[in-house]
Length: 240
Image 1 (cartoon, rainbow, N blue to C red):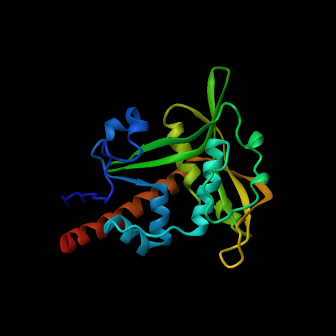
Image 2 (image 1 turned 45 degrees about the vertical axis):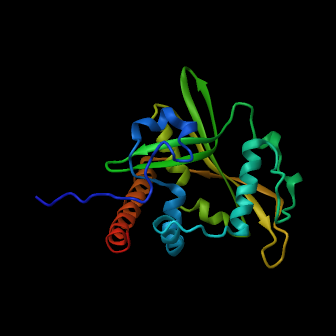
């Protein structure tokens, strides 16, 4: 019988993990477990060199203006107001309608965990709402994204799996998934033609949630985890 391959990842759940204290009840059973986040999966697939520098070597890389823009609007969604710190001079704040984007019963940055055989997947739902109908709890999982012209196509594509994974975690809790979508905010301007601007072109991208898409999403993460683990073990052997 072939020996089972061991999964070793650069990130482990500990009491010192930056997200542990606020989610202790959820995470305590997984202390010591290797984990990966959805953002790390995306980073591995799109920016492998940067992932290795950050996760394997522990280097701090400079953020991009586009990443900072997404963080800026994400903080506004979570807090109901924009951060006072705006070093890039982002504009268009008046175009985010908090009355529409932030219903009273919503929860923001809700943490999820999906246990796999040798590791766990973690993530944070941008906006989570639920309602009860005939004693059945039904959930709406929403992610907020920003981007320039044409970027929205990335999120309507079946290869986009973030919201699907998060909905799967909620469904595992016995809650019915009523709706999954991305709220897309068009960004204008660029690093060559500043400032980056929050335009008034904002819309919902509905996503179909089904078993086939869940399987695709989980298979994708499993594949990435195996690739990272294999390379990380080689890195540890020769550079640790």
